[in-house]
Length: 334
Image (cartoon, rainbow, N blue to C red; front, side, top):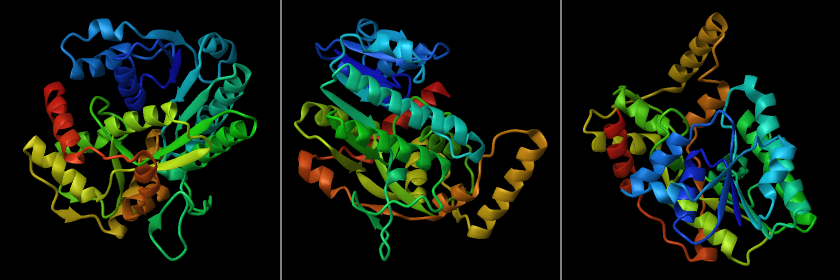
């Protein structure tokens, strides 16, 4: 039996779509307040007759830090995909991020060991990869430093340390570090904000870039990692290194709207950061642009996926295909 955490998120929902097409028995955790209609909607993207497939999932209400509920979720499980995480770059959310990402992963590792799980596949992030001293090209061996790391990266790194601890205690593990994951259905968070932002037809685009990958590729790689004999390895999972300008242009082209034409300058980003801080103080609302946000939007890191490609002999699907599909769904729902 397979257990999926984070089944109500972008990766988890798409993973459930694929797993329920097989004969595997699939269980997924969810919070008490989570919306399963959103997950069912993801299923509807890929099949007209999706209801029976969706009903194959055995849902268990279990918060990532609720040990008794998780123990019930682990009964009879042999494989675990740990996709649950909180994504935030707001320093005020550090305690919450640490609780969910790091402590929650520690709980998962401990239960995997206690229930003698055959393998744990963990979805991390390229945010936890290091830097090269004299190069912008990053690989799995690049040295990690917490200097200038955002709160999300710090807690995901701590989560990875828990997974490695589990591996030292005998738990077979594989870690994937995906870049920005593009896919349909979650327009108010993560990469969904690219589509929502593009639809507003802003004139400006961020100057930097990063590694991107489709959600379908992430799912295929997770399953390949699980069903392989690979153990104690991590893989940077990106299909292409792209600028934010290129991604926004592709989205705007598919939405048939005007593309942004002006690059945001560093001083403009810094001004927006200060204005956002004032807004946060006056309204007590969360920060949207922090110093680390400015740094991230300005950087143009290049991620090396050679290890993954050679290990799995993997060919990625085109980003343009997923962007086009996502734009169709976005237009239908907007």
